[in-house]
Image (cartoon, one colour):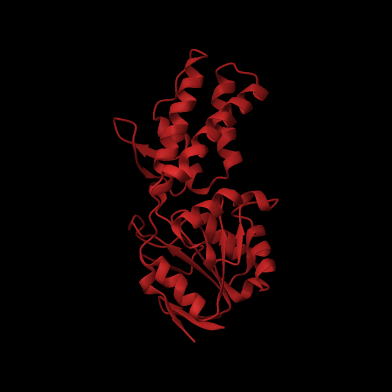
Length: 255
């Protein structure tokens, strides 16, 4: 057990659960080009039906595009930030269905678009870690804390992302949306991760960059819910968070 201190809050903890995208790795470094590829693929499918992407096509995934349709940023409250892969495929399939494609074909074609984007994503992406996260993970391990990942992404690609970043070995549990019946903001991921770590939710803190992370942590009864906003896009913490940080340097860990 160690003492975690941040923003005037102190708790005794045995483990830390972290979201992946935007919490361990810089979001756009992994998902920017992926989102562009998905939108390009979906646009091709729609044009086959005489349709187009809607005005403001980035809204479909929750990303902001420049005039050349390159991703500039993402919406922390949007599908790409908080949704599961199956939920995003459902959104894409809806636009094909609306263009006259039978639902079963719409789902198949949307799935093909997403799988094409997935195929080269890990290989080609230059994944950047969030500032200070590697040192934080190493400090946790020095103190004997157990670490887990709880992500809206699926488990297998998540492990590939962690491996490419060189930090997979730090985690004793990786729980993806495909591992549970109910994803974020439900507590299922926390419960499964804690089971795999041999801990109780009251003994862990959750660190994440979305309100879904904070609500998941709160509903599971975790010791602390830490909201990280590296880009400084929020003026105040979400209501469901105990504290907001800009950097992992703000967290102090003591034996």
